View 1 (cartoon, one colour):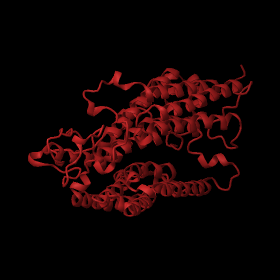
View 2: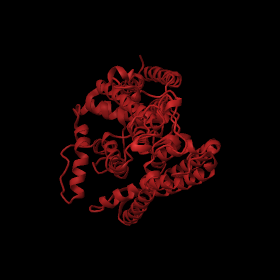
View 3: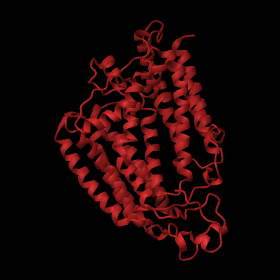
View 4: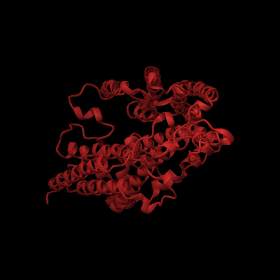
Amino acid sequence: MNPVAGAILLLTASAVVGLLALSHIRTRGRVDGLNLRLFMVLNFLLANVVSGFAHVLGWSKDRGFYEVLSGDPVGSTSGLTTAAWATFLASCALWAGLVVPRPRLFPARDDSREVPRRPLAPENLYSFAAAHRVSVGGLALVLAAAGGVGLIRVMGATTDQTGGRIISVDGGNARYAFLAGWLPWAVTLLVLAFAARRRATGQAVWNTLLLVGGLAALAVSATWNGGRAEIAYVAFPLLAIMLPRISILRWPLIVAGAVAMVVFVVATTSQRVGATTDPWSFIDWQWGRFSMSAWASNHTALHGSLHGETIWSALINVPLALLHLGGVSVDNPFRSMVQVSGYDLLGGEDQIYVVPGFSAEMLLNFGLVGVVAGYFLLGIFSAVVSDAYSRSRSETNRVLLATVGSTLVFQGIVGQLESFEVFVTLSILPLWALWVAERLFARPCDLGQPLEPGPAASSAPGSPGGQCGPNGTSGATALGGARAPARL
């Protein structure tokens, strides 16, 4: 079969699989925490399937760093066929990982760990920020001040800046880059502290003002290192926590925010690429991943498999970064994904602008088998995060899980393993610190909403969610009802 025709057929099959996955996820009868399963499938369709059609059918005039329509016949020497097969197999593996019956793989120990069939009301979550409002707010202000200093220092020590975003900083300024990267989480914690104890329906306006102000601050604090996807990444956890609190104002805010984001994306892309008549350039940070899979296939055919080199680089990257922050400079003996692509496509390992994506990284290291295994594991991990968020009775847990989920959406498919590891460890240390603090200083009981609410599990009058009854028991237990699970 002609390579182009075969690629179109496989891309069409991938699109069908994606649509079936979306339908299955929507109708499976379980709460999809954060709608994470849906976002993962949608992101895959955009980054791999839509990008594939845009490239192969010539919808886009500027098709990125690698051209798949080369050779005679067209596409015969560029890795096009392998990229198309990788996309189809990945779509099937991701769907399987997202919906595999997990209780058979990870047996539940008791009913409290089952995924709920309805969302838990936010006012019934245990809020560490509400219990320690002054402490959390004060630490968030200190962190915001430190992040502001880091941002100013980084902006003044830029070694490379493209289209208004900082690509890298001079040696010795990495610690300031981390401080600047923590600024969005200081904003998130401040919003939680101000929103604490203001959860009644009548406070929807107050919570909306807090959310709008927080989103504006996040937009300012995140533009220095990218802008478009970065703002969405840091806004995702705040939206997940605050949107359920603003009731009737929720949908107007979502519509207004979506319009504002589209305007910002168009303006930012126009600034970076100049005047263009190519509408696909406005999603240019996503659609090039299919062509990168073809590049990975061709690179492997010419130079051989990496046999997990970029995986090893990702695993030791954070420990080496901690040593570097402590003043001990140790070079990573393995190449990262962006170093491989930078050298091959741009002529130097310091050219780290091209992020090939998850499909390309798996192809480079393990071939098609790696693609199938990688996406299946990515789907399982995303499902674990989604279900953990759904059943969590702790606001702190939910913020942390929402941030991990945001990283999966905006880095899991379109990013590289090395950056994903940094994002869920060093980049969100303030959230991990809050999580540890809750476990050290939280109240001895948790009157969170049970998964299947019943009369015996309701709070007693005068014993609002999160407070303890006599002798450290919940209000429901004090009235003779069943004790709420003491699990956050």
